[in-house]
Image 1 (tube, rainbow, N blue to C red):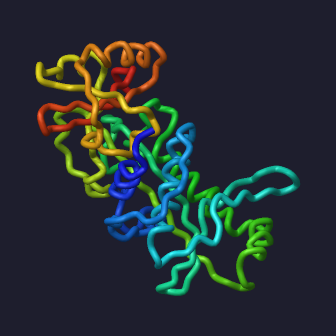
Image 2 (cartoon, rainbow, N blue to C red):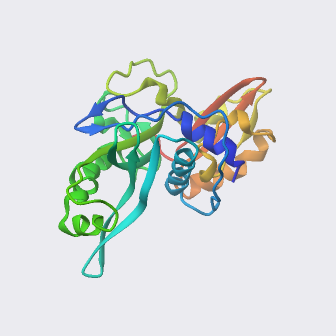
Length: 272
């Protein structure tokens, strides 16, 4: 896994998928990226990408003064069965309020059968996830968990009685679109579009003689290609891409041509 500063910068500058509210989901607005980090945390490289993002959020919180973490990753257990988890509860010292924030960090590709402003248009690179599914889960399960009687009882260990809690989401995303994509995003944040997705065959057609390549591990998807120090020619990435395609798994590839960087998601399918 890369330098923690590179991951932190990439996470903080990863755009929100929408501004304000969407379907009743209100975004938690992070303040601008801190120029200096004075407190560090240990992040294990074997964690899932989503958990690494949660750690980076905690790092952000620890390096500013406005918010305090009351708890994070609070499991709610009913009759010895885990029914859910609250990602983080914050206290906002500016407005003197408590915030329950669910943290979401996603990578989606555009299903061209839909308008890009349709919530159904965005799916996970391996087709086992979608924006629609995640929004439904937030609305119907994750946010209502706060009101569950077991949760309310558990909160007494952390909060004074009869305290109101505002609910937010921090929904960050990187979006990948087909080559020559020309439509405008209005429902979602156009700054989230960071690259293209294409098949292995199309990727090889995009090759230029001066191109350099690198395939980041999933844990490094959060950082910018510009932070990569060592690059190889196309022959260095072909075997790995082939391996992923045979396994029917998508793979992120960065390319560098002088000071021009691109991100490509190589997908093992042609259509939707």
